[in-house]
Length: 260
Image (cartoon, rainbow, N blue to C red; front, side, top):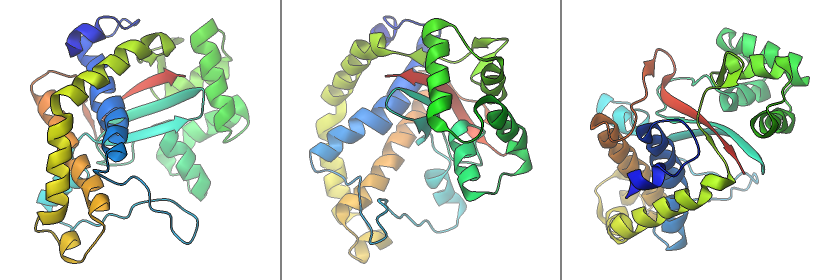
């Protein structure tokens, strides 16, 4: 059923590639996350006195836990606003070379050599770290085929374009019905089982967080990451979805563009 939905998408990429971006990323780390949160199975927010909203997670430093914390396919990097997203999805085994990471490094004022050329091209293309300007230029390119040469050079540098053309899947509003149908399929297949599993595990599993009384809904958030990351690893190993290649220092990921 999921494969048939992918066949309705308006791009030239394989079913496995589309399923990776939509099922592994958009659904498991997006729509289905919202489904679980809306039914009280996990938390997605924790507002701190500083005004920042985040969940803190600590892992013991050991090989077995590293595979769960950074080694599974459950990590989104998204440079996004209300009209567009330049994104990548994969594991967290390094500094992924994408726009999200570049902008975060520039915010800190410490851009390593690996990102220096990209930062220089960003300055040349849009005059600095102006997220909205970059995303607006990307929308213009996708919708009208018009672009500034400097912007195309920047997109090529970060692997979103090649030889003057977008080289990653682009998902637009015309694809939304098929994507929403896929989300409903997933909810119907595993929604209740996932709800029951998270609610039970977050209260009874013998881990430090439970022993020290951490909010079980926050525990469930990280448990869900482990679960869907492990599912994604299985799907990739079985070639049901595309398998991203490992890049030294970056880990594994595939990139795509969403237009809202």
